[in-house]
Structures are given as C-alpha cells and as structure tokens.
Image (cartoon, rainbow, N blue to C red):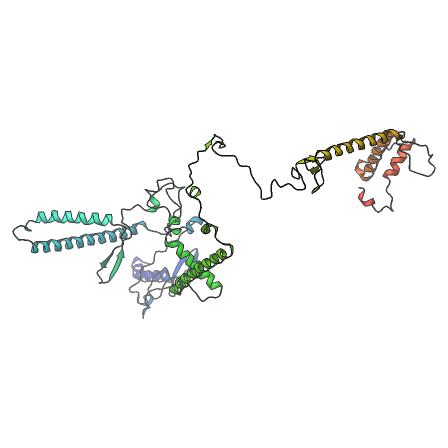
Length: 480
C-alpha cells in the first residue's frame, strides 16, 4: 500500500481508536466498558449516574459531549487504631486564620465605635463651652485627646473584666445580636496555669478541669481552684438538693419534673423545707416537755460560766494539785460508809480462803450480827480444835501397804493368772505391730524377703490383741 493511501485512511483510524478508548478502559487488570465508570449526566469519571450530585440534565454529557464536569479528588485514608479515634483527625490548622480575621475585624469595629463616641462627647463639650476658650481646629490636639480618652476607656474595661456586658453586633446582612464578654482575652486560660503533664487533667472537648492546677500555691493569690470547687459551693449545692428532692418525690408518686416544670419543683422544695423545720421544732418541744431542759431551768454559777475563780491552786509538771485544793475521794452511786448489825466495817473489807467477809469480826456470812473480838477468838479456837482433831484421826488410822500395779495379760483363756507383762517390752511390741500393719496397707513398701520370728513373747501377743480389729466393734471405723 502506498503512502498516499495510508494518509487517506489516517483520520478514520484516529476516529476508530478514539471510539475504542472511549468505550473501554483497563481498570485493575480487567477490561471493563468505559460506560460503567462514566456519569451519563455530568460526564465525570469518578462516580456513576446514581451517585451524581448535580442537577439532572435533559441531555447528558455522554451524548452532547459538552459541559463535562471535572473529576472529584478522592482521598484514601489508612489510619491505625489511634488515628481512627483521634478527635482532631482531619483538622486543617490553616482554617484558624479565619477565626483570627473575624476577631481582628470585631476589635477594629469596636475601636471605631469608641472613637465615634469620644468624638461626639468632645463636640458636645465644645458646643457648651465658650468658643474662645476651647479650640478644636488643631487636629493633633484632637488625636492626643482621643488617645488619652481611649486609654482611659480601655483601663476601665480591663478593671471591670468580671462584669458581664452586652453590646450590639451588626453585620453586613443587617442582623443584630448580643455578645457577652465573660472574661478578657488577656486572662490566662486554665490549661496554661500549670504546664506539668502530671498536673490536673484538662479535657479540651468539654473545657473542664476538675482538680486544682496549683494546689501548693497561696490560696489568697489563686483566681482558679478547679471546677470541683464551684460544684461544692454557692448555689450549686442548693441546685443538687433540689434535683435530689424532685427525684425522690417522683419515685414516691408525685407528679414532679425538674426540667418540665422547674418553678413547681422549686416551690414544692421550699414547702418541704418549711414543713421539715416545723416538724423538727415540734419534736424538740415534745422532748423538752417530757424530759425537761436542764440547761434553761437552772443558771450555771458564775465560776463555771466564766471558767475562773479567786481560789489559788498550784500544780506540778504532771498536772497534779500540790496546794490550794483538798483532794476529793472518788465516790460511786452506791451508799458508802453505811454500817448495819453493829458492824464497824462494811461487807467486803476482809478476804480469806476465796471468801469475802467483815473485817471487824471476821465473819463470812453476810447480814450477820457482829460479835467483835469475842467472835474472832471463838473462831480461832474452833479452827485450832478442828486441826487437832484431824491430826489425831490421821495418827490413829493405819495406812495400807502400797501395792505395785502390774499389767496382766488379757488375751486368751489359757493364760496363767500370775503372768505379768513388762511395760517397756510391751511398748516396743506395739511399735512393731504398727509398722507391720503400715507395711500391709502400703504395697509399695512391702518387702520381698520376709523373715519370720517364731519366738513370740507374751508382750507380742498382747500387742497383737490390742491392735486387732474386731468386726463386731461399732467404733472400728474410727481407729484409723
């Protein structure tokens, strides 16, 4: 084929290639039709027709090939565990410049407003005063006066920063609103009071700091002591009590709701406090009527009331009284120094042989009549006579000869009566019998070569009988 023929088919080939690339596209290793990725309405390649956010056209860009919308920029974020839970994710720091511009524009409008007010005040002063004394022709003097007045106004604003002000803010659209200045911008933020990481925790989302950031500083110089300080002082406690009263009243069946009807809840809470105080006073009056009031009936002596007297008392280092006051003996609630039945001492003043008695007559019988020294002599003579009788009785009685206890054998029926067992040999035989029974129970400790001793003594037979288990014994299960 000649070169001229190829040139003649060139435009047709270009059109054919364009249609192929227009209708098909190689995406993710697969050959897909281009229409699946093309929006028929706007012509963008990043979404389909169902996801298109533009106004539907009568004839889409697919057929008209005009006004094709640009493709959206799709960003893919691959975040880790902490990145997904970051509250500041996606924040653009450059947007803060708009906030700064808005505040600067507000401050500029405020300055202009103050200048206009000062100019109006100066004009009024100039009109009231003599024109010869006050000259406003010089612009420099006016500017100096404005600066001085503006400085005074700023100082007054800073000194009165705690006062809540209202001023009108106007915008280009004509809307008006009120702005409340709760604190000046020069005031230090709470999270900047202590930059230590381990200090009080600050939550930036709720802007709360519950603990005191500077606990060791002087309380007279601190302006902020944490949010918990405000929660437990002032009207916060009253508000908590009001909420608790409304909850308890609702649980008991009263139709009360703090958010739906706050005035009703507050009125009921006031009535509740009044009724509670009345009940307290009534209960106090009834108790005083029943038991009396010792504090109001008799007035205290002046010495006790003021805690001082003219009596001179001297104490030592340990707090004991040396001179100036007689030592008072401690007294009990029982009667003291009361003598009955001619006794000169009280019951319990004498002790003998684990028995109490009277010291004056040495009698151990309570409420007995006192016999005095004669009773004491008679009691001693009776005791001596009893001792003599007991000694005489012991001397006349014959003491039986001491019989040595012998351990006799108890096994069998053919045992001689005079058979006596040796205690030491019996104890050894019992130990051997225990070891033999232990080896029988434990098969692992049983020996293969068993040596039998055919010489059985009487002690061995007694040990065997004592350790033998009788099947008819009801306590055989408790032996092991």
